[in-house]
Every structure is written in structure tokens, then in C-alpha cells.
Amino acid sequence: MKKITILSVLCLTIISCSKSNEEKMFADFKTVEIQKTLKTTPEELNFEIESNIKVKDIKASDSIQYLKKKLSEIYKATGEEEKLTFDYAIKQADTLISSVQDLIELRIQAGKSYENYEDLEFRNKWIEKKSELEYWKSRYDSYTKNKDKILSAEYKVKYMIDNPLLKIKQNFVSKIYSDQENTKIIQEIKNE
Picture: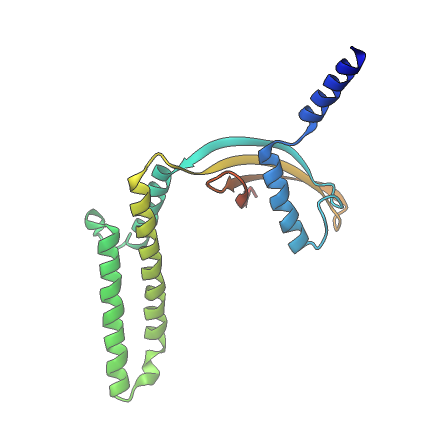
């Protein structure tokens, strides 16, 4: 009977002392970061997670709002917000790119290609923006099909490390985000 009691207490102790899945994910994430940036291990810095609290699930509906906000930021000064859709924005970007390209080609034909430097940069910037818009549109379309789909989880984590340069223990508070399967951390935003 004593053996069973001791074994039960030992198992309970091991279970209660083991890290949660979220803590393991964050520890793995920080291990890679610490090894890349500081060329050391978390153990050498006495890395310790004080708390890791799930704040909320990030749903597709949250991302829809975020993408709409990003779209309106690109066109905030146009006064055309009521017409604003991803298709409209892509079409407008395409028109702008084509117009600037025509101007560049006209200058080349006139022997003034040296005047094209700023326009080439402007055109290339809008080509990148158009690519972003097309990507955002594909995500937006995907998210509108299932607005309740969970895309990520947000956690608030408090942790500390020994700073070897300052010779002090530093405390950090961060927001962290998991992947869709909640198997790894994909981003950390440190509170400054």
C-alpha cells in the first residue's frame, strides 16, 4: 500500500511540475531566438517563464477587420472609401502602374530616360502594393467563407533572463501568437 501511495505522490508531483503545452511552445521559440541572437542557451541565461496566460483566440472575423483596416490605410486620402473593395483597389493600382509605365516608355523614346529614376521607384512600390493587395484579397476571400475559424491564439507571457552584459535579471512581458494548430509560436511582440 505504501508503494502505491508513494508512486501516486511521485506521479502527481511530476505532472504538476511539468510545463504546459503553451509554455513548451514558448520555451522552444525562445530557445531558437536566444541561440540565434545571443549564441547561447536559455539554461545559461537562467531563462524562466513566470506566467503564460491565454488572452483570446484569433478568429477569421478578426482578420477580416484587420485586412479591411489595412486596405483603408492605403486609400485613406482618396475620399473613395465607400467604393473600397479589394478588387477596386487592385484595379486602381494596376491602372496607376500602367500609366507610370507609359510615362517611362515615352521618356525613353524622347531620349530622356534619365528622368525616370523616381518614376521607376514609384512604379515598383505600387507593384509591391498590388502584390500585397492580391494576397490580402485571397486571405479575405478565404476568411469570409468561415468567419468563426480559429487562426491563432494570443497569449500574454511574463518571463525573465539573466542579462550577461548588465549582470542583472531582466523581466519581460510579451504578447505571443501561436500557429493555427496551436503547436508552435509564430510571433512575439515585446511590450516596451
